[in-house]
Image 1 (cartoon, rainbow, N blue to C red):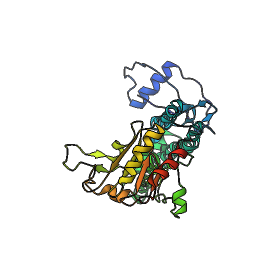
Image 2: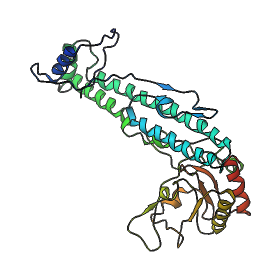
Image 3: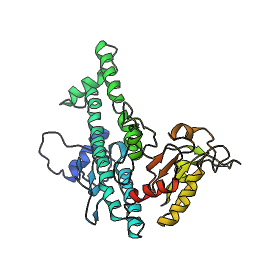
Image 4: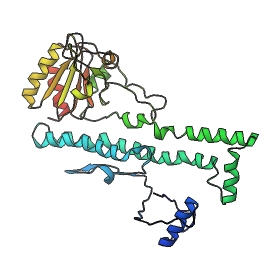
Length: 341
């Protein structure tokens, strides 16, 4: 497969099949190379995101609302995330478990993600320009390009400097190849996320890492992804279970610990009252699951008798630092708001 970019500043004219064949042979360096062109496709580099993803009962997702080049590999991921965010909300509203207000949260949660993704993907292209420059690929003529390229193997001060510049430029592409932060650092802010308890307790949202594109900030703060932690049962099974495995599957999930029995009881009652399945688990010593590597204890950010409530899309929608005086009443208030009832 050959990928060619048009020369900057030159008016585009569609090459003939013979011109494509000549360029391919030139690239390989064999003018007599037998080549058969199977297909030619064209694509434009886009940096486009819709101002809003939904209006009334119309909901758009995927490439319909965000278009960008394949750098960082964010395209399919972002499309699937859009669908994952929207699907459970439509299901809950259509089946009468939630009010129409729940659907209004889709645009507010996902549109900012789209802005960040198209910005990052296009910056991925820009991050490669210093590499091309350091290798001489941006020079005007083949002779000038080869002169710079030869410097990379030269035992001269100029060659040493050129290699340093190239290495620094390659390091600058790490945001494309190792950018876990841009994938995972999504913090939703909408009516389907409750932060009132956080503000009342004067708990600020966790600060992003110094480089939020490269590094993922793990947190149970409402609006964040449920942190992963390996768990197992008191009598260990062959395979560990992740906290992420406990959540999702089209249902809400409540995680608590020793002393949080009232949260589990409240979840069972609210499940019947709202008609929504809420799976609840206690994590800790001799509980439903054991924190085998103590990862959940480091990441839950609530007391053992507190709880973390996770939406069907595995995002935290609310948490309580400790057991409440009336767990049933508090959980009912939370679900009423999250579901837009």
